[in-house]
Length: 160
Image 1 (cartoon, rainbow, N blue to C red):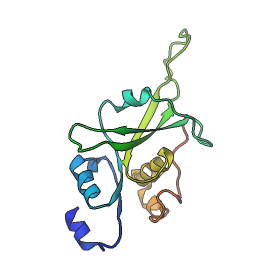
Image 2 (cartoon, rainbow, N blue to C red):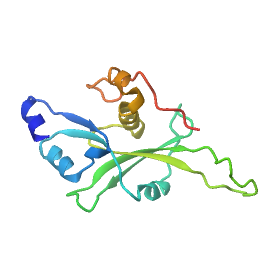
Image 3 (cartoon, rainbow, N blue to C red):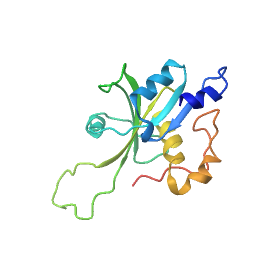
């Protein structure tokens, strides 16, 4: 990252988008110190339990999706950071016991850490679509780097 930033103009603030392989406290500290921004996919054990306790308001025009934002500090971080997340309700399993009166909802979770003023849905659209391997080439052409997440050729799948 130091080599990359050394080749870029110092007069601009850079915003980096990255998958979970770059979710490292030292990298975020380095970018914070340089005044740069980031939107990084989070991969941490135990976050599903944390998010399950959060109650999100359904996202307008996105049936089955709920957003959440919270401050979080991992053990090796210097300070708390903003985590944004969305969860999507899964369809009940085919072997679900029909005799259960109130089945517990099952969700799929997506987490991101960011310095940018993005809603959880904007963060999800920006990174989930960008790093969708099968569509990566066509999606990159549709992302506007000046306004994260404002234009996309593809949308995340519908929640079922």
